[in-house]
Amino acid sequence: MLAIFDPSQGTEKVNDFRAQVLITVEKRGSTESLAQFIVNDVIDKICENDGIALLAHCDSTSGVTSEMRGQQRIEIIQNPKLLGAEITNDDTASFFTGSDQVYKRKLATLKGSDSHSLAEIGRRATYSKVGPPLITALRQCMYDPDTRIRTNEVPEVRYPTIRKIEISAGFFTGQIFELHSGLNAILGGKGGGKSLIVEYLRFVFDQPSDILEIEKDHVLKSTNY
Image 1 (cartoon, rainbow, N blue to C red):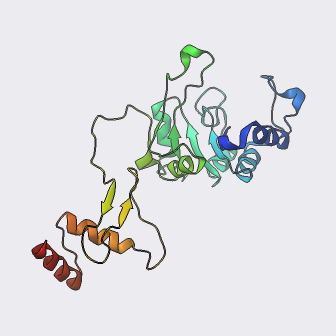
Image 2 (cartoon, rainbow, N blue to C red):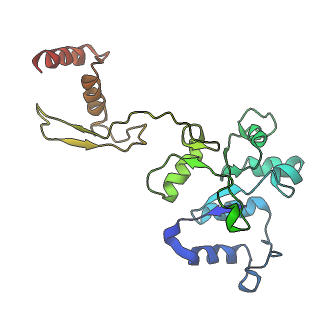
Image 3 (tube, rainbow, N blue to C red):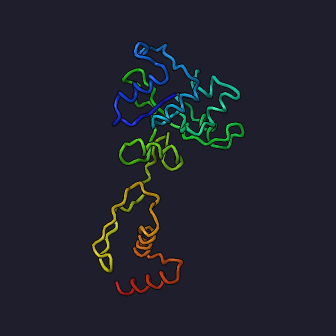
């Protein structure tokens, strides 16, 4: 298993977690140390500690998709607290598309160096669409891998982004909305201004609303400005 914790919590959180899975102080640093729990229990404990649980090099000789068989492997992959799988071979990703009739589970797939020397660092990499490297941002990538995770080279194609919206006339003159380059959704309570932002964008790109009253207002403003 690969457990990822918020870096701001420091090594104390890591050591506390290791103690919970009975990897005691005298066992730390030894390649022979083993957690005294089954895999699903370790996944649950990672989640209880606000971490992200991933299958580590699952298609290696001792990995879950290579060594394990039958119901044990199915129960691990179907654990809702498991958020992804680190793979070595591209073909392994086909296990986690959600189309497999045995697993019936879509999982994010990642690649990592799994390096044992400085020269091996970066030999395999995963590209994630995130802002600041926060645990919440990484967790969101696991929930939305189709749009936020790439395990092959990032394409050279670049897409335009809207950095901010600034209102120059009308009731909201001077109002500025700062937008994140990775934004693909606007969240908020009723009356928070979500629809208003969308309508401003419609106005800027000259895309009238399907709502008649808003369309009339759009045409009026386009004429005036």
